[in-house]
Amino acid sequence: MPRPNEFILTLACKDSPGIVHAVSGLLYQGGCNIIDSQQFGDLEGSDATGLFFMRVHFEAPVHLADTATLDTLFAHARRQYGMEASFHALAARPRLLLMVSQHGHCLNDLLYRWHSGQLAVDIVAIVSNHPSFAGVAASHGIAFHHLALPAGSDAQTRREQEQAVLAIVERERVDLVVLARYMQILSSELCQALHGRAINIHHSFLPSFKGARPYFQAHARGVKLIGATAHYVTADLDEGPIIEQDVERVDHTLSADDLTAVGRDIESRVLARAVRWHVEHRVLMNGHKSVVFR
Image 1 (cartoon, one colour):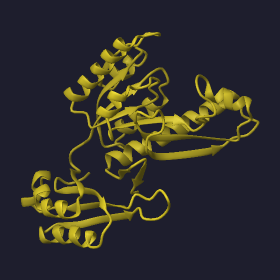
Image 2 (tube, rainbow, N blue to C red):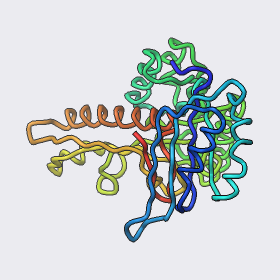
Image 3 (spheres, rainbow, N blue to C red):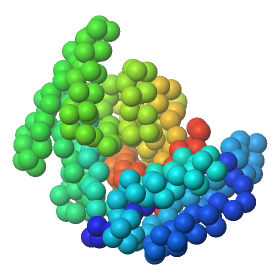
Image 4 (cartoon, rainbow, N blue to C red):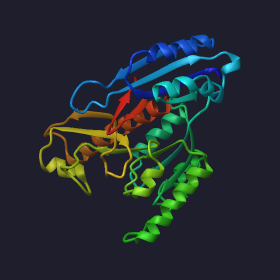
């Protein structure tokens, strides 16, 4: 259980000498105690961004123990280095909205981890385009919103449905939207509104096996390796910055149903890790990539 005076500082800026010294010096001068610090400079390779990333877990004295005061402390350093810097109070539990269609494995896994205390968040609502999980939400005391999208819905219907989603996000002060097997393509407008605060999960067959029953397609082709990818949502379908991936070997003895079961287990684990790392402020976006401090 984090104490009220524990914070996480995350920052990104162009790499240059003196950043670590400046950050640690300011925290020292303020009477803070650094518990853990990680940094990474993306300087090598043809796709290097030249950016420096840092995550610092620290304790602050009483007179600095709020994010606004810490922001003021770092105002000069932020301007000097062109930092994108954010302070996060560990005592503040992130507020999550889960979205799901008709496959509940990821939803149920996240609910279990939340209920058992493995995931330190508040799940404030579940949204679905089907009514199937209303009972699951009720059993956990979570508000359920059935926002239907009938087959063949026109652009106006989809726009109104997404506006309803955004209204929930704003009303419930949602920090992170998790697409826990929500089988709808989000518009560019909704992706932009949720930039950096929406995570999706999908199997790692893309683009090989698209559409319905991908594990059955994989079984028909004798696939020997299956996996899952969790990434931030962008307007480029299933191409946002990757947070986490995992794979598992399979063989000819497994049926298509067996493959589906293995795949769903991987999807649940990968999504849970991505969500946990995000809410622990371990993930920083780096253009089309991400930096994950574990």
